[in-house]
Image 1 (cartoon, rainbow over the protein chains, first blue to last red):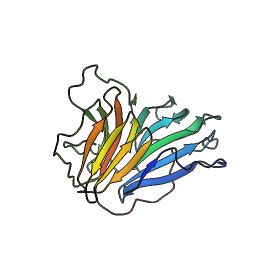
Image 2 (cartoon, each protein chain N blue to C red; image 1 turned 135 degrees about the vertical axis):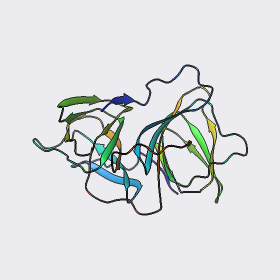
Image 3 (tube, rainbow over the protein chains, first blue to last red; image 1 turned 180 degrees about the vertical axis):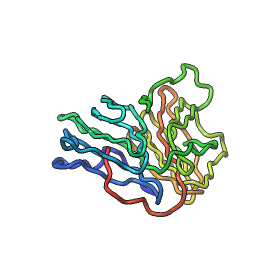
Image 4 (cartoon, chains in turn brown, yellow; image 1 turned 30 degrees about the horizontal axis):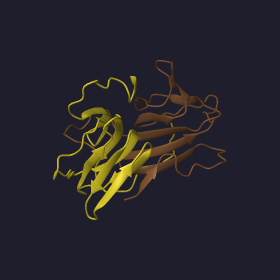
Length: 119
Length: 119
C-alpha cells in the first residue's frame, strides 16, 4: 500500500494536462488530473459511456455542459456527477495556479450501493 | 445534476461522524465523511469486502492498519488505497478542525480500467 499526496510529483513544465490513474478495477477508475491553464479544444466535447464524479481539490475551473447548456464555475471542494453521455468540456482553468481534480469514472445509472462504511 | 461543495451543510453539532453517499452505482460508492475528533472505538477494526480509496481533503487524521501493522498520519491531499479485508481503524482525527474525507468503495483486485479520459 502506498500513501501519496495529490500535490506530489507535478512537473514544472506541463505542456499537456497530466492524467494519472490512482486506483480502480475493471468497472471504476479513479484519476488525478492536473491542469495549468489547459482547456478543451474549441468545439471538442467529452461524450463518455461512464458516469463521472468530479471533485475540484485546488485551483479554479469552468465546465461547460450541454442538454441543457450550462456553465459551472468550480472552486476548491466543489463536486458534481456528470451523467453518462452528457456532453461536456473544460472551458477554462486558472492560468497561474495548478488545478487539481479527483475524478471517478463508473458505469451505469443504478443507485449507489448501500451499507455502513467509514474511513 | 447538482453541484455541491464538500464543506456544505456540516452541522454545528456533530455527535457522530457524518457519512453521506455522494454518487455511485451497484458496484461503487463515493462518500463524504466529516470527522471532528471522532475515532474508531478502542479495539474496533473495519474489515470490508471492498477496496477503499481514501483522500483526506482537509483536517488531519491518523489511520492504523494491520498485517503489517502501520500508523499513517494524513494531511490535506494525502490518499491511499486500502485493500479489501485489510483491517484498519481511525485512531485519531483533529479535535479542533473538521476532517473531510472523500472515500470510494469498489470491488475486487483487478487492474484499473484503462482508456483516455479527462475532466
